[in-house]
Length: 87
Image 1: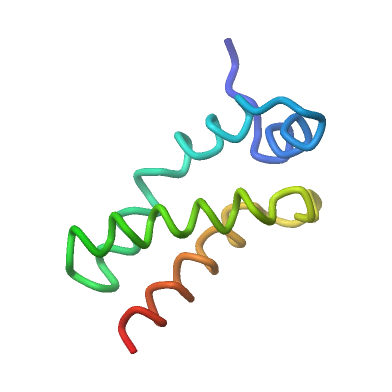
Image 2: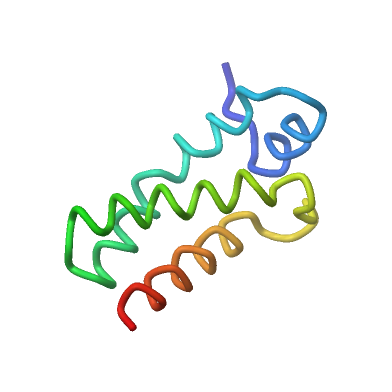
């Protein structure tokens, strides 16, 4: 089966397909975790911030504008959470 694009997954999730969110998370999980870990240097805190990132995404995804890049939005959330943690 061909992997769906982020926008296709977002639209599917907005149409009630919960598996689409899980697929989005699996697709971005390694890169987002590495990004957070590089910013803060603490594996346990990075895991927590990673979870917080995807909780924020889950809570706000129905309002996300699918014409914008999901990856950019995801990394902006992760970066802001990491900066807040470092303060």
